[in-house]
Amino acid sequence: MISEWELFFRLTLACILGGVIGYERQSRRKSAGLRTNVLVCLGSCLIMVLSEALYFNVEGRTNADPARLAAQVVSGIGFLGAGAIMKEGLTVTGLTTAACIWAVSGVGLAVGAGYYSGALFTTALIFSTLGTLSRIDEWVMHEKNLYLTVKTHDKPGQLMHISSCIDDLQLKVRGVKVKADEEHSDILIIEFEVYNHRSLKSVVVVDAIKRIGGVVSVDVN
Image 1 (cartoon, helix red, strand yellow):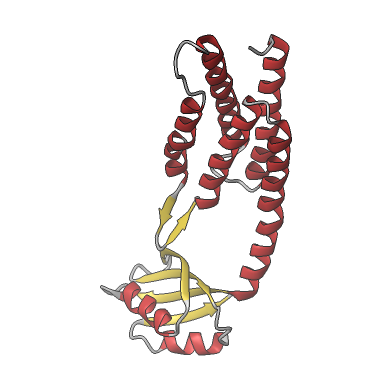
Image 2 (cartoon, rainbow, N blue to C red; image 1 turned 90 degrees about the vertical axis):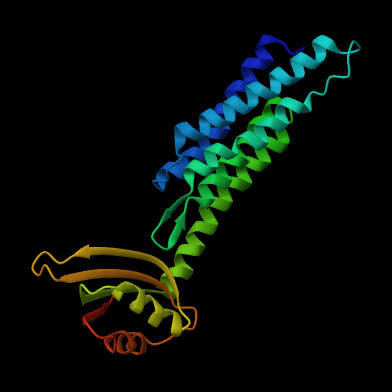
């Protein structure tokens, strides 16, 4: 059995490591921020400590497995991950946040088991991965993305026609927002975020969309 000081140290360290990762998520305005990651890491740590304590209490009297409670954390944390994943139009968001929550639960389990070096190294790697790779991804995507603002008459199936046109150009739609034009009730404003992996000139994309009947204008940002 671990001492009360050791228990306090493990729980505190779990809060700190979960908070480090949670701070990075919250600074980027993600759904699972500081408090969520701290609670996940802290709860995982407590369950791991409890699992070891139960094993030591019955050691030699039964075939208890101290990993069984920990295994339930790994599988059970999925409900939080599922809640973080959302589908907005044609875009799925929250996958990184869900993976982060799952990884943070592993950090908590490692601290709870007394595997401090593994927990510290993993926290550092998670933090650097979320920070560094996110910046690289934003830089690459900014270079390859096209932001199209299409004004079109409100006709049945018009969004599908425009999306099909973009698909025919072998471009990938990453996000769509539709709103009404405040000045003209029969006009829709459709904003597309398009991944231009083929590096097509924006003029080619604009000309192709303008050929669709009902399209009033196409602007590229």
